Image (cartoon, rainbow, N blue to C red; front, side):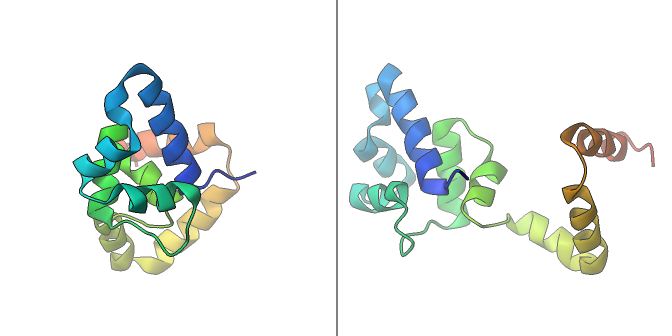
Length: 119
């Protein structure tokens, strides 16, 4: 079963709440600037409820998660990554399709080589 954005957020928030009451639904909602009922809808998977990239980034910071992970789970891609893809859409589309078939260790090796300038 695939993890949904809402179930991931709820599980992470509830785990944190067990150790720190400041991670209640109400308090987290207040810190990211949404109504508690709205965050509750998101956690329950209400498809009419969605967060902007800015709110997802705030939520990621609150939960100690990588913003790109939460963005991906919500079906979004950050604006900076979108811009990179727009510059060379055919190349990036093919690259992503090719990477889909590779094991994680191979993708990580490619990423390290690119980051270290070994290309």
